Image 1: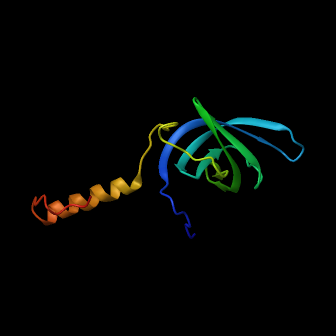
Image 2: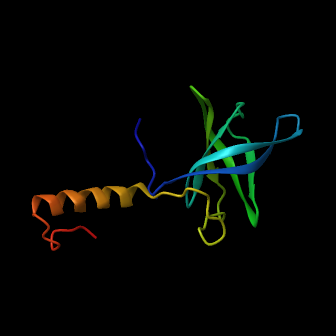
Image 3: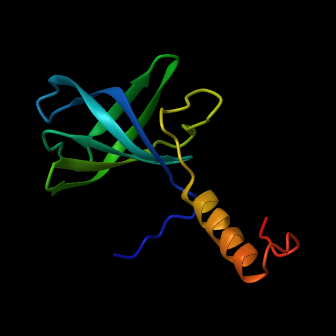
Length: 129
């Protein structure tokens, strides 16, 4: 699958409250696991599907993120939803820092630096920033 994102996606694991309305305008609420997040979207894992195009509110202790469900797929352990945040709604680490937040780019840099050091016999000049 082609990943067309232009923003880095950070891996995380945190429980968030979500709510959405179905086609009959009934309000639904549940808890979801936040799997990853970027400035303009997030991936959530839950135990039930939510229709594509559904408006969604993700709430956390100090605020909320508003978006639309862009995909919903079942993968072994549950449903994974891609939520695109609405225009003007952006995630900020200052506002909400999920638990277990991890930037995979930093892992790659550490691995490259470790290999460079081992190949250079400890030459500290061979590192990536």
